[in-house]
Amino acid sequence: MIVKSKIEGLNEWLFIEDIPDAFAPGNTISEKKVTIERAPIKMVNYQLSSGGLFLMYSEMKFTEPIRIYTAVEGETITSQFIFYYPASARKMNPHGGSRHNIRFIPSSSATYELKAGVDYTYFMMVISKEYYYKLIDRHSSLHEEFVQEIEKGLSASYAAQDMLVTAEMQRIIFELREDKKTGELKRLHTEAKVLELLIYQIEQLNNEQPEGGKLLREADIEKLEHARAILEMRFADPPTQRELAMEVMLNESKLRRGFKEYFATTIYDYITRLRMELAKTLLLEERKTIYEVALITGFRHQANFSIAFKKYFGISPSDVG
Image (cartoon, rainbow, N blue to C red; front, side):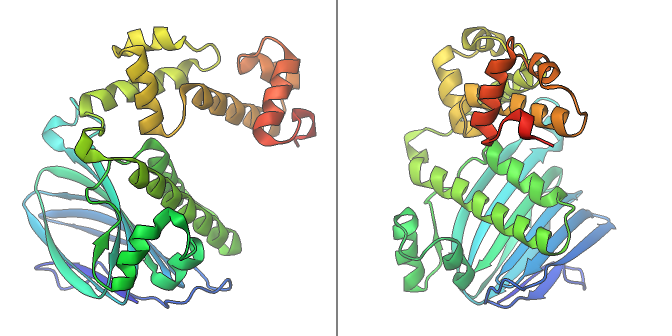
């Protein structure tokens, strides 16, 4: 498959990659960074490619509207994420807006206009049809209707409308972007995260019905982000769900439902994750005693901490390190 893109008016390509459709375990990963900083464009592209796979993470800002031409040759499944932050409103709404979807794109080209005065972050996974079916079996019930559309050979979207990007999806994109591994570990980590991200997308796209009004409003998202920030600061001694709801000015039921929808986890499980990840760091890197770690992470009794740790990681804290 060939994927390529350029800004109209510029001679150089943002990217032009000829990627083998076939996935092979021995495929190496190629990485590239492209920076463009000349009026009216400020853009940084991070690219990663391997057999059957092309990833691109791009941060973009323009002082006047521009048009981007993109073309794909070959049958691909493309997972697209876009985050946008109007510069004039960023202080009032620091979380901006976001959308994602999964699309089947046979050979095609298109031109998109991007607005001035908006901070864009764009993440794209271009996956060959062959590799996609290695990640998720062609006959899986998870994507039955989508596969039917793919087999027709016509452009198709997994969901009729784009959906909100959840915090779990953002976390995986961040991990892919910041990964410093090399060689075989890099390839394995990338493959695992690509599959994990697709699973979160499919789960949400299968369950959500945006036409029914289930998408969270921006005001709700700000309150949910505030709730998460509170938990991250106070997870060792967290507020009750009722107290948390009062702090962020949401009713308790809406807080629970919204937190699960937006972050793809419950409040309780999120607190547990924060405690356990810190506990692992304290044990491995700071060599704290189990008793010390239990106190720091909010457990009154060492035995309760040990039980929780083993349930979360599958091993006892005494076996770490």
